[in-house]
Length: 239
Image 1 (cartoon, helix red, strand yellow):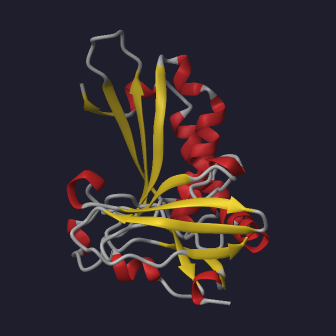
Image 2 (cartoon, rainbow, N blue to C red):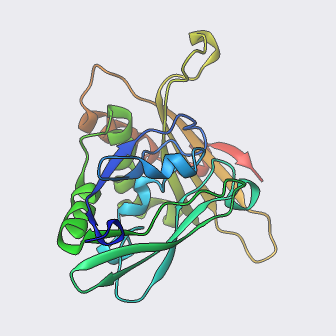
Image 3 (spheres, rainbow, N blue to C red):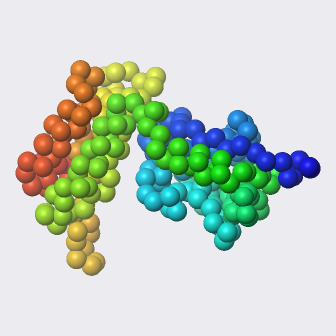
């Protein structure tokens, strides 16, 4: 069998990006036979966030069908249009998954070779990674569970608002304590406006402690938000 037809193994690794300010959630980084080959050809690229792995299996970033699908597999922390991104076309053929037709829109011209995976191993790894919570720190778990609680409550809709999202806020490395915001979560929502009207955005800057359980903190933070009209208790960030 030639190298081109060799069967590789996919491993998906959760990793907090070095430049996490752009997206504080973990990226889900694909390793091929244990090697981060994407870093070799697109070193500035970040894989798609774990937040893209929360829906049904067919919506996961690396999901495949017999129909070829072009996927942006890593992107810079700015935008793909600014600094380029790495794309691959993926499809399923029988008992194999194929990644080919690589495209690098940055200034780097090197590209990985075509890659074949065993479909059963590939799909099992996607399912494992989607369910993996072992990488989470308390701030991640609080953020994830608080977003689930708020989204399921329907509270913002009662006030004509929509929950934009919840994000972990990490301690900034190499920054003096007095100059950085303590670890916590940020909650953002916006008010639904009539067409042509400017959107009003609001936010909460909440803190996470290490002396209470994650579940207890989620209950307390949710209770604070759900106690009154959020437009009165949150910070107005943009009108």
